[in-house]
Length: 112
Length: 118
Image (tube, rainbow over all chains, first blue to last red; front, side, top):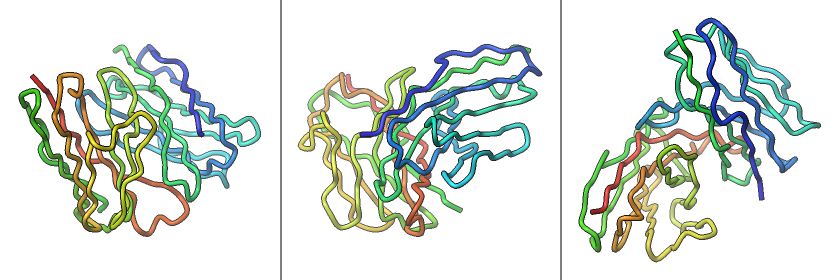
């Protein structure tokens, strides 16, 4: 089955710096890659997603890139702010398979 | 749009009792709902996939007789933790996949239910 690995597990950056989180997946049939932000005790919130027919997507300070050949995708947050501090999860899903497999999560700390 | 609710938001129960958690899609029809469990500082672990009108599909290692799932309508799925024990204490989150999402698996999450078994 699908396996998603996520790195790093913890990331600490200074406010204003960029943060990059990387994920790899195992099943080449995966075609949907969402990223979620989860604050303590709350539901995961979709922040951006990318589909296999594009290589990059950007939404203000957040961007995601996808390399289908290498089977990895990354989240980039620029000009980080303290409110970006949270746990971020990448995920991968296979068309028609319905299941979404989550990475282990990255705890991001943005220091003011 | 795409709002998913969960009830209750938290519950404390005694060991041996059963607890029912409801997951509702409020403004869309969900052909598929997913149930996850999340332990502190860990990722979301898929427990089962629930399709309206059919039996749920459980992930390996999840006891179907202990975690009963009923997806009675396109807007409601329930998870019943039977004979709960302290090790079942966790954050249970449901998500729903819209009927229109035939190709991509975009899901919408409920707010979660924190279960504490004494």
